[in-house]
Image (cartoon, rainbow, N blue to C red; front, side, top):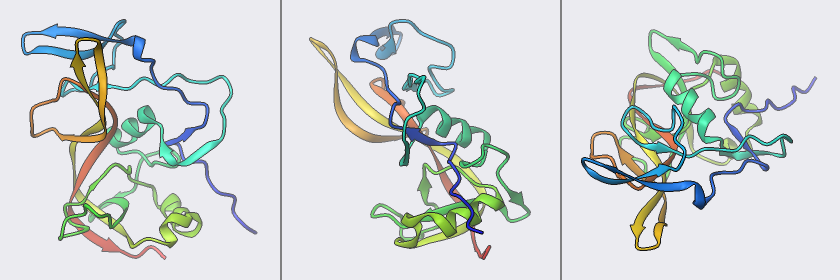
Length: 204
């Protein structure tokens, strides 16, 4: 019997909508102006002070976008080390947490060691399902990993700059490590971890 594809918990939907530009404002702090919402809510910022994008939850679920992640659900899985497919606890043994990673143009020469990823970990059942059913993995160089130290690395998103006419988007997918000063114009949409202490494993 063919197992139907699982709906990834982190997957975005075609009906997802981000904030309107009119919802953004300027907040003045001791360190200068920073991007903010006109009506702040708890959880808008992470522990490093980065502002996170708000997504309007549609009444209709819409089409699943397998190649895109919902910012809030991606952040939840990465912060809490939950499986990106089922949102249950990700698998961990004495060799580390379970991840899938693939080689990218910006991958370090040591790949998969010290790879920086926005893909949350997985549980054993769903890493096997992903390997069988994901067409992307079938056409890319990838590896199933045990990671002892998946350190929180930083956040990425849309970078805004302040002009005389308000905030203007200037760059997409800008990545800012937590080890560097926070950028006041970043509207974060993905959380990243650096994979350290990597062991390539075979779960076939």
